[in-house]
Length: 233
Image 1 (cartoon, rainbow, N blue to C red):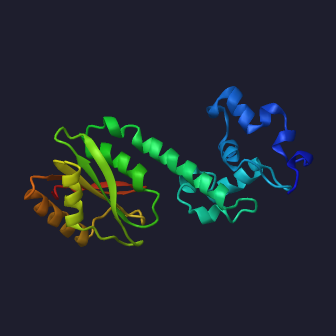
Image 2: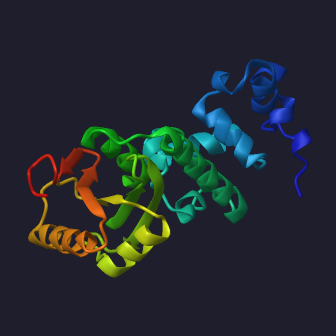
């Protein structure tokens, strides 16, 4: 294996203030650029490029935008020379942790009061999928979130959700109300007839179990559509 200490591209040959790990230790994570943070995940580069150089290439895959980068599969990172499966998985895991932290922090404290409030949470959780997913938020009697779960995953144009699965999970979560949700990768926020029929079917079935369907939200990067706000529930 090439001894990186002997190459000019080795981070160990840089000034201490330019080394990502040392910089983070001395100044904190907020002082580092996106590429420097990714370089820490990569660890080492190769004889032609440093870890920071490789990190910059990775960022370019997402047009230098972390939100776009988070949409990419592990295989996309491996197309860069010097990024094997282990490094690619580390990067994907870090991006997923960032997304979960952003979405999960308020969840324990979240009291649902408006469709906009819950739509912002849902967009964070499912907007990165390039295919449709159907998710449900399960709430307790105080309208606080007990549980969030993606129920089904489908294709680019649709997914199927089984009301029996949803209601069984609602009973397991001791939910007294639920909020349905799915994404539209196309960006369109207009509900289909199938969306309307499924909502009515789940609402009717839930009624027999004394479980309320509070809303059905369609989310995309362009915004959200609330069945409740539009008078469809």
